[in-house]
Amino acid sequence: MKNIITKIEIQKRNSERVNIFVNNEFLFACSSELVYIHNLVKGKAIELEEIGKIVEEDNYIKGKSRALKYLERGYKTEKEVFDKLQSFEYDEKTIARIMMFLIEYGFVNDENYAKMYTNTKVINCGKSRIKQELLRKGIKEEYIRNAFDKLSYGIEEERAKFLCEKRFKVLLKSEGNKIKLQKKLYDFLIRKGYDFDVVSRIVNEILEENSSMFCRELEEEKEDKNEILEVASKRYEIIKKSEDNKQKIYKKLHDFLLRRGYSYEEIKSALREIMN
Image (cartoon, rainbow, N blue to C red; front, side, top):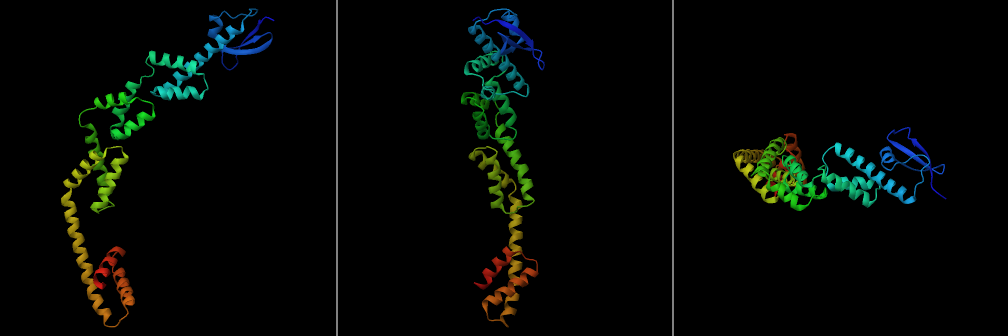
């Protein structure tokens, strides 16, 4: 039995696509463009092989259109576009044709993508983080190295120092301990993707530039410690005259210093020094 096209119907929701009926039954849908290319008309006999080629070509047209629409949202890598097409369940042959078209006409270019991405991200990230993100996006290491080579000399350390100085000023509002501050700055830059050597150099440089600030803080801490020791010692001598129990002396002295507004850490340190 011959396969005869009995009806060609324009789709209601998409005038650029048509439904093809063969022997009075719906067989497939395709782009109206393919109707003209393959000279599909009512009453024409059509072989199954030709139908297969039309469906294959239609998948290519639909896939290409979807890929271009996806690229309208922003520049993408080959892997990102490939994964997107796979999510629509196109066959490998169709995806390969679409990717070849996109690469040939410059719609996707991984080498250019690596350069643009690096130039944008280096403002707030180190090379290690940028490299990991690009690798995850399917960019070749060769393209990543080339992108890094194109960066302005010293830009990574310049940005690392800028970000570190900014973070340093914020942390100073809540953290005065130099060791803790140093660790927080290290952790901050490491999370940003900077190598340990860069982080160490930048953090030490900033702490050195602000060393006078920490010297003043150390002096103030020393003065505060001497003050609480003097107050605690005097009170200790008074309490000892009427109390022999060491635990009760400790509690009375602790409560006294607490009422005077000293912190738990300061009190603990002072009592350890006086009573041990």
